[in-house]
Image (cartoon, rainbow, N blue to C red; front, side):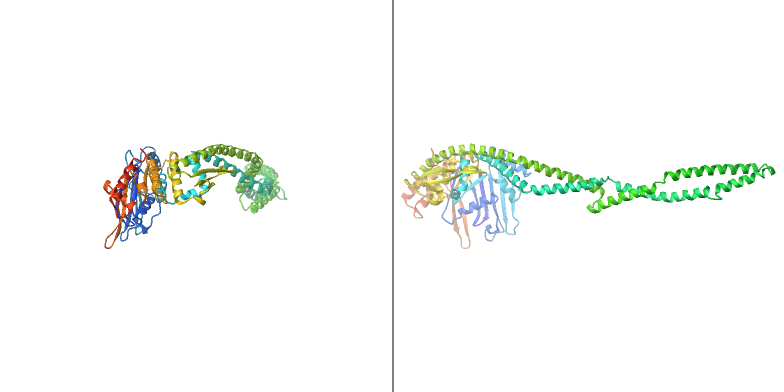
Length: 561
């Protein structure tokens, strides 16, 4: 809950501090005194947009600081959020201090316990800490689309509604998927055929990783072997395969030397060398012939390799990819084909899945419908009871349930109807409810829904608009009842409401020669009687008015005893 609010240089407030009562505080003042400024300041702390127009005339900055004293589940919730924002958590009895500084130069600043944060983070941090119920917040009652959420909140059916929404969303998602898959079925079939054609073409050629490089390497080797073959041919001819070959010439030399060997014994050595040479060269000639036979198929192999290389090059040119990339593409195409086939299989199963999803959503919606019908009767009766004490004893209230086809929120539309006077039929709130009736209905619903609303602080901004007298006293009692378990700050113009408060603040506009400013004062008993008397009878206070104000305060303090 809020422990205190400090405001400086904000609108026409120079510097004021409000220490709020943990239960019920009332804020009163004449029209134009600046009551709405307090609301604007609180809205800023909840992450509202700041403007340099908010700065008091002639000042460089405006500052709003609100301190919260949070315990139990509220401190635990805030600590979780602080931890997510990587900010220090609150310790026992430590306040949460939020400050917003608005600079005339545009250098605005938001701090939480001295640590800077962003506006969006401030919204997340303070969500659920304060609920502001404005004078026109009852307009939510004029929107029939909101009534279903109010009923579910009252009956604690939000979790069941979320089950219905979750299952219906699943059903809708499957329905959309079925529609899309059905519409794209022909496209998938054509795509599968295109993929098969591409894959078959590539697999028919059957390229291997690095094959083109291997072919180039082998061709270079075979092209070199052509030069070798020419040398082998030349060598074979010169050695043996022509007249006057080297072997013939050596053989002739050897024979002619035989006739001269008797002349000198040293010629034996020459003859031996010639004989050995002839034998060696003859052996070399046989080896060359064998080698030539081994490489005789080079031309055939080269032709085969050239044809294969051309085939691979055409494939690479067609796809503008390397062999490695083509093989990767084949893998991707096969995967894509499998996925498309899987989608076709999915299409065959979707009808059954869709039927099951609808049945599951409908089943949860029927459970929700049963609970809503019971809750609608209960809420109608309880609101009529609450309205009894708010000057609407003859008013009838009805939660109308109209059957609807299954949608995110169930099987029905909900609308609140009233019959303000006996003999009148039930009609929508927007058609016949007055501003005062809407204010009282809003208050009655707030009282009934407190059990599911964990907001620690309520700020009511003139929700007592359009009422007075005994009805206003009933409103005050309702607010005091809410304040038993929540902190309540009510901005009001009705003395009957202010009389029920545990603490009474007055905001007053004051003028000097050159400036106007609003001041806020916590009223003591005597000042409170004076303010109540003013609210009852205007500026001219009489003894009777003061006695009336005194009695009203006494009665207000005993409102729920």
